[in-house]
Length: 549
Image 1 (cartoon, rainbow, N blue to C red):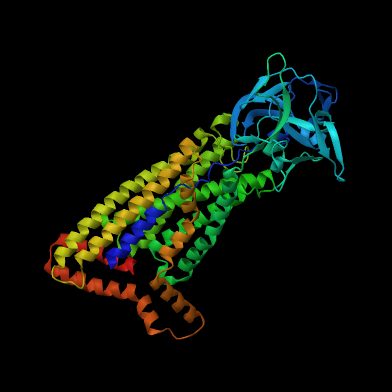
Image 2 (image 1 turned 180 degrees about the horizontal axis):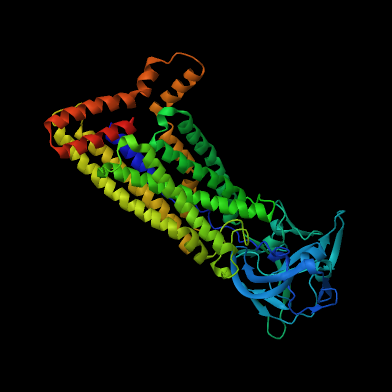
């Protein structure tokens, strides 16, 4: 059974080889601008007065309600860099805004805006706060107007043809549909359209309201961080179990605790960030860098676990079992040290003025985590992740080969002893391990990287996101929800309460130590009758027995 338990450990390491990056989210504004992009209009051509205000199109913008933007946004999901320009917070001044699908004096047909000289303003009925309806209101005088399609896929309301398309434009700029939730200005737009049967000489122009189709991505933006938060309690329980029970605080248990700690902190902070919890710029920046560091720590400790299991089966003799503390110190210096080095590089790049903005991580500037640019995400996150995952894959392959070799050597040593080795069971366990290792590790993290590269919206990538959200549950089931761990918890509880420990719990909790004595005796006998190379096999078998229970 030792081999079965070791292969379970290898499968878990494979299971957790995924990219801890939240899915593609709605783009966010830089934290240095006075108001959200979608609440502004371009006022670059405005006139400054002596007080520092800008007069544009008859509206006066005070200094705190305009700023320089070096980006534009499209459809709430795309953000790209442009030449710096001045934008004014029209929705702050007018209080209530609506959105035109196209710029003024344009018509919207077949998804495109084309220039058209309109001779009359757009008139719509508006429902006032007291419930009265004002008919034929000039919306450009009543509301602030912002421009652009709010989403990629929209449909036109036709209230003259469909009862369900009846709408009410409220005084706040909100659109109320029949039996539907109110739509804000970023969920619909107003446009002039030309009728399909129009003639060039006498075009027939209508005013239409276009509403966004339900955006399945919106649910993902909320479900993903909540899913990560639901995973946190399982991680916390796993950490506490291994911290409280002395028998589990061996080298492998300590490595697992460090890995789980990194995931716990990273999951919690990243979830809060995507739920837009941080109240200030400083807290936002602090949480962003802490989450970034935590994920780096988790990846390096995962790499340590892979190195350790490979080292064990390779039979390296430089550090023996009685030097686990020294080994743990070396691992800690490597894992924490590498994460600190990468964090230091990121902090330096972030706060050195000489570094171009395109090379900054953008944490606390455009968002509380890495800015949504391919080069930035690749350099600061995906590059170290891909390198570590590649190393882990190589180590998994080498370890699998060593396990197979060890099984053959162990079978030769114990030929005829069915109590210690059952070839059929080992073959079945090995096949199960390799299948899980390939499916879980290969598919999960590969889909993560592909989703980052191509930015898909296909349903298949939701499967990957769900698996990522369940990482805490998977770790709990594989490392805590086991008969031996449950017996150790019962033993610890009874000891804490001063109750006698049952013989069953005592036998279960001392299995590791007895297997150590038993295996030591076996090793002594083997050394007297076998060659030196068989000693190495015995030591590896001892390791498998110890961590397998």
